[in-house]
Amino acid sequence: MGDHQQMQKVDLASDKIKLSQSQLDYMKILEKQNFDRVAKIKRLRTRNIVTGLTLFFGVTSIYSYSIWAVKQEKFLDEIDDSPSK
Image (cartoon, rainbow, N blue to C red; front, side):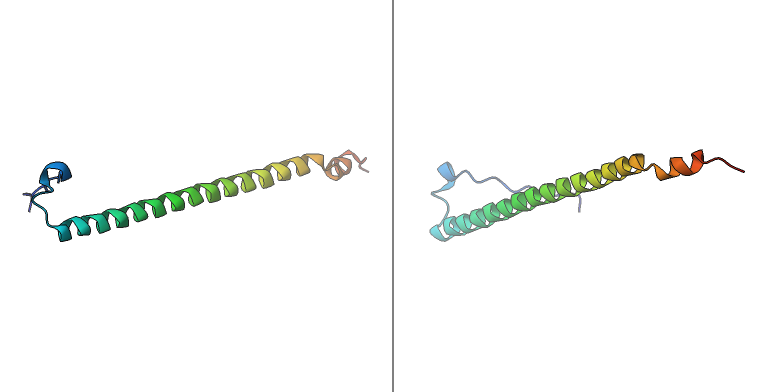
């Protein structure tokens, strides 16, 4: 099981003579499918980054506003400053 065979790389310039037309066509199909898959992954990654940044800035702004709003409240200070009996 530990003995893995490594696939040889195909050099189209020198190996084109050895490959049939159907093999070349199949390679082109696979190459296009791989290109489409990579493009889909890149679009998904970009959308994930945009979604993550949007959530981060939304949560940060809500937190910041909450802290600012609590600092603006004066009624608790007025209760504490009222004279006791």
